[in-house]
Image (cartoon, rainbow, N blue to C red; front, side, top):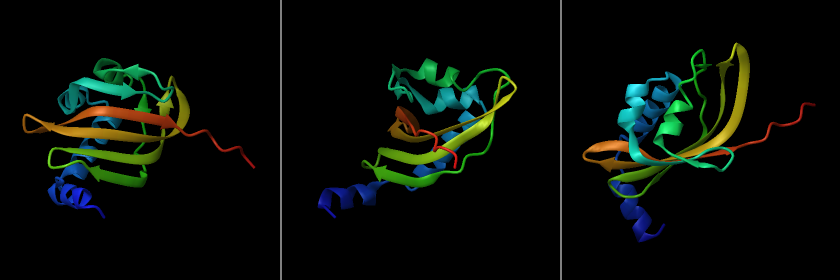
Length: 137
């Protein structure tokens, strides 16, 4: 382990997983107010197609009327501390729920980069990578 990585780990905020969990809960619960608070105005959001978007598009993507989301199961969760005021939280998951009266499932890996700004943790960069469905059989 390099000295720089060891120092970053020593200075990582132990509550970053609590912040990441609250951010996930805000999305799944379609809690616009919490998402507004937890997302930086200058958010860079790279969606599953590779398109660059911002805070408005990210939040709006969770707010479709009638959409409901099931609880997430996170697989291979990784936290990369970037010092005392920044960290990347990444995991693989399958987002399931109901949209337009129909069940859906979408498998992907995401990376959420958080920075402490004005004493509050905020998502500043989110990248989503779709994972193709495995063929049945």
